Amino acid sequence: MEIKYEGYIRRQKSQIDEMTSLFNKMTIENLVSETLTNAPSALHALMVIDIDNFKSANHIICVIAGVISSQFRNTDFVGRIGGDEFVVLMPDIPAKEVAFEKAESLIQIILKKEGISILDNISISIGLAFSDSEDKTYASFFGKADQALYVSKKSGKGRYSLYGSD
Image 1 (cartoon, helix red, strand yellow):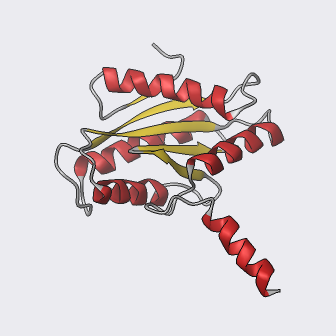
Image 2 (cartoon, rainbow, N blue to C red; image 1 turned 135 degrees about the horizontal axis):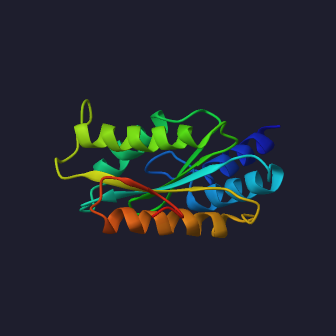
C-alpha cells in the first residue's frame, strides 16, 4: 500500500511545474489533446499568455501564475509551458464571450496591479483560439492561439487577440 502511494505522489509531482505549482508543459499538452478527443463537438477556448517586458525574475512568474490560476474554474486547465509563457484551456464553455471576458479581466488585473507586487512596466499579452472540428491535437490548437499571441505582441502588448480575426 505504501509503495503505491509513493508512486502516486511521484506521478502527481511529475505533472506539476515546481516553480508555479501549475501543470507543466507535457501535462497541459496531454490534457488539451484528451479534451479535444473526448469532446470534439464542444466549444473549447485555449489561451496562450506571455508576460510582456519580462526580465527573468522568478518572483514575477510566480505572481502572474497565481493571478492566472485564481481567475479560472476548477474545471479549466492552467499550465506553464516554459519561461514566461502559460496556457489555459477552458473546456466546454457555453459561449465565446466567457473567454473574451476572462482574457480582458486578466489583462486589467495585471495592468492595474492592485494587490499584486510586480513592476509597473509588466503586462501580459494573450492569444485566444476556439476549437473547431479540425483541432484534434494540442499542436494544431496551440498553433492558432500562438499566432493570435503574436498579433497581440505586435499590436502593442497588454491586450488579447483572437485567432482568425482582423
